Image 1: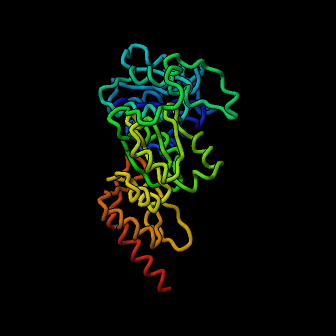
Image 2: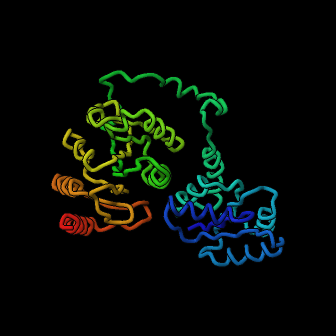
Image 3: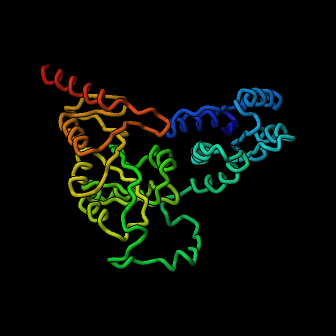
Length: 330
């Protein structure tokens, strides 16, 4: 696996690494080298050498540095001379780091391969609101040729939507989903299935704006998702479905959508619910709904990010029942 060195003035690199762990999970072979106000170039160089020496693979090293021409870059560039397999990318930001984490999961990719890929990905992470302030980019001619609605009855692909993954998450589309899970699943569309959100223009707009670059997000009511699952025009769609509650997932399946696996990411605590894990709380109806879904053949796992091990769902339900019973007797 390619080793990653994050280098910056002050605590920027350490902060980006910490935030990256919140989104993508803790990562091995990632080290931080910071230039503090009291340090000189030689001090930074010494720490840089120690950091690289701590990596498992010192042949494939990717340096993500904050600023071209700054001391961290200058010292890294000098240190990298003679190491033809190393690569340096400047402009360190969170989207860049997350993309690097994802890319290096492919053991065939070298530091050079990942570096070449990161330049465009880092730039994609820079966006602006209002959207009218975005620089105008001419749409490719090929894309224009396919613009417009697809006629009813048209069959694309095999005529059946590919539901690549399903997740229950109170927060729906957020950092962990837009980055870590989307990179893992590689969908070409994210679909939030919720009657409540579909009729809430503010939440709907915020979700659509939170979509990761290159993967559009749509918000649809449950009835519409049932229609989509039967529409041959979605045969070329690889979808990542997000549900706010297990109850919404059950309604969707009872409507005829074929779903056999689901991930529980988070279920927020509210009055009457009990805390089961640090991200999941359940009430009596949640427990009954999940048990009903399992009876229908749905297999569950519970992970916040792809790198986490799944919680034991049986143990979660057992704890929820016990705590709810104890709560009722208080």
